[in-house]
Amino acid sequence: MAGIRGIVDGPDFVALPNDLWDAAQHPVPSGPHWQQGVTWTDWCGGAGTTYADECIAVTGTGGAVPAAPPIEPTASGVDRGATAFTVHAAFDCSLIGLPDVDQAAEALARNEALQVSRAFWSGQAGGQATVWPHLAADATLDDPQGIRLQTAADVVQATTEDAAVALGRLEAALAEQYGGLGVVHVPVVALATLKARSLVHRDDAGGALRTPGGHRVVAAAGYTGTGPDGAAAPAGSAWLYATGALFGYRSDIAVRDFPGTFDRSTNTVRKQASRTYLFGYECAHLAALMTLGVPT
Image (cartoon, rainbow, N blue to C red; front, side, top):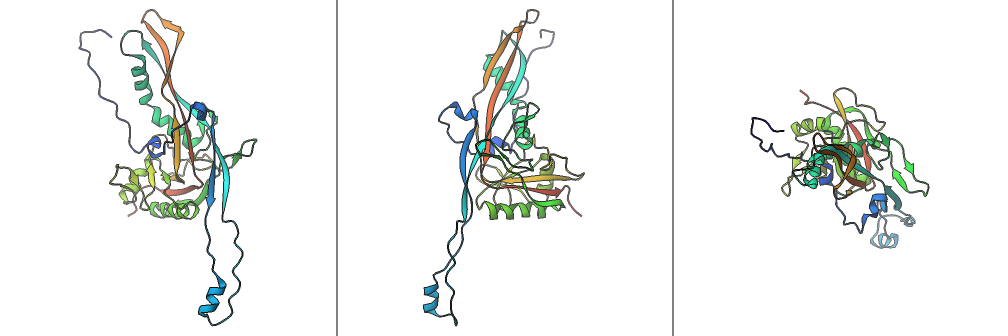
């Protein structure tokens, strides 16, 4: 790299905001075993109402009050599972210079968030469908033990609709099916439309993007906007997804070299930096198709 021009440091790399990892809760792992996958129980469903018919009879209603209906289960426990996947960056590393870990972190930082969010949207890692659960899915999948790895997205708006209508239907379904703060997953191409319609805003706490209903918005670089069947959205539109609360694990950066790739002419050896991720979410898994652009 020697030459007549001086060697300087390039600009600092700044990661894009509204990332998938930042929107997830980060439970403290008890060890590395989460990298083999995890299982948990979701209590999905709701509550109901009833009444005490004898109390109503005393206060008077102008007629006989039927007996209160029997109380039936309103919520159910679902055993859910999630699988891990690994993001890697390979590079030719000089044996003289910066420490390996610095070079590894720099190599991963340039593309890590994009690859993580693309895997979580599509379910693809290394060209194979191995990332569960993921967003763009139209079928359920259970493992041999009956653990639910994947749910089919509940499509609340199947045809192209105004952004406000599509997002409103997502939020309404999320309120009904989950009842808590969830996550709305937005492809980058749709973010400007939502912002132009004042459908997303930054909260006062940490600057995170929120919907009118207060749900966290993820607009990750790798979100492609494809539908539950994996097909591209019609021209001028994009798919949105919503889930219950999101959690994630990730490992430290691991670096390994390949001595057989040592190049004596440049004193470099091929190295690989990698990090393993796992994501899961609660109960709701919703999809809606929205129109891009601001209507006149």
